[in-house]
Amino acid sequence: MNKTIKTILTGAAVFAAAALILTAVLVLSNGIPRSAMKKNILASAEYLCEGDMFAFEWESVAASRMDHYADSILLGIAWQTDGDHPLENVMRSAYYHDPLKEENENLLDAVRDDLPSNQEYMRYWHGSVALVRPLLTVMSVRDMYVFFAVLMVILIALLIIMLARRRALSPVIGLGAGLIMTAAWFVPESLEYTWCYLLALVFSILAVIRSTRKNMLPAAVFFMLAGMLTSYMDFLTTETLTLTIPLLIMLYLEKNGDGSAAGSGRDDSTKERKGLAASVRMVISAAAGWFAGYACMWALKWILAALVTHADMRSIVMEHVTERLVGDVSNLQIIADSYYGFSISRNITALLPFGLGNGGLFAGVIIIIACIYFGFVYRRKVFDRAKILAFSVVGLVPYLRYLVVYNHSYIHYFFTFRAQMATVLAIALILGELLGTGRKKQRKGCR
Image 1 (cartoon, rainbow, N blue to C red):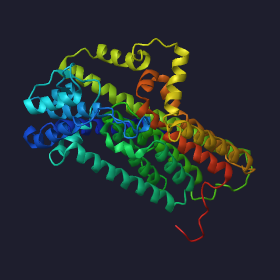
Image 2: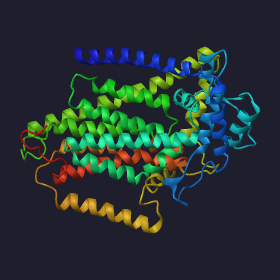
Image 3: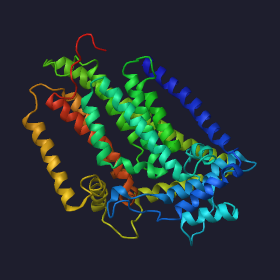
Image 4: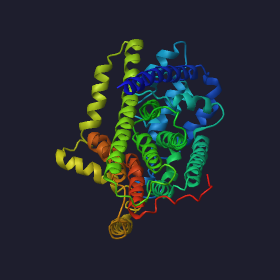
């Protein structure tokens, strides 16, 4: 109990400090004058107007569909958050909107003709504005796509190198497969898609570091920070990635330690029960911490917005929640039971190779059959059931999300499907444990 109380108090202190810092950073970014951004934001608006907001990079392949609609709104907010009331501007998150035009055209009109904001977007933090505004002083959105692509490659390479040095083969294979199946090379072409991938990679790197430094924050507080930053940066895209990917890596490294426990061949029921208890504790504490950080950070925005702007946030929030949970898709009435199934199936079939037509679907089915075959036929006699259970639970998190927020997941499946990168990673870790190839034992004397 004392340890639990200490963790809660630590979490509360960290939450308060982090929330204060993040709010201050967002307010301070408001101090950048428009004149310093105008050249690059005008170039950004012109670039976004050159193509469709939901263009396909590969014809009819959902995984290649961009979302420059959200990017146009983000840039519109970044352009308008300027004035004598920075905290109020940040809370209102306003931009110029003409319902008769597309958002990229509205952005261009607002910048070119210096039009004032007339549409508020208060339910999100839009914390990415604190990063986008400084970048707009030196580059356009087109340059940002390249910048974040390079950053993402660096983070992926760093994570893979760190795992490879620990001879963690299953996570390396799983991450590689997950990045391919979610078409990660398209992610940096939309700022909206980018934030959760970057956060997931950063916290995965920290998870690897944490596996060797036990004096770091407790798991619950660690994931609380991940949830906070996700709520702060994300536009409701693949938010669960910042929980699932680092947690799967942490579970793998925590359970395997320095490699001596994996594949030891000991059929010790007491040891198995202890392993199960440890895995359950980690999953529960991580999930609880992440959800607390995510939900409380979002609630903090609503409370601050209500206090600063005197807006009725209850109606705004309820409209937002209702639309994403049970709203109609293109005004079509769909039977609820079928709707849930459609939400999940749409996201699954957006994965590669399933989303590449009939041939891709056939290849995907063959891959699934092969995984089941090798996992069943060539499984070793002794394996860690607790570990497999933990991986399975975390790997199913994306589908829980699709069921809970099924309207949003159905409409925006072309980017929400990427949450399944965690499912792919979980399957790789499960197969590695079943086959005994998840981690090679280190040679004596090696570090």
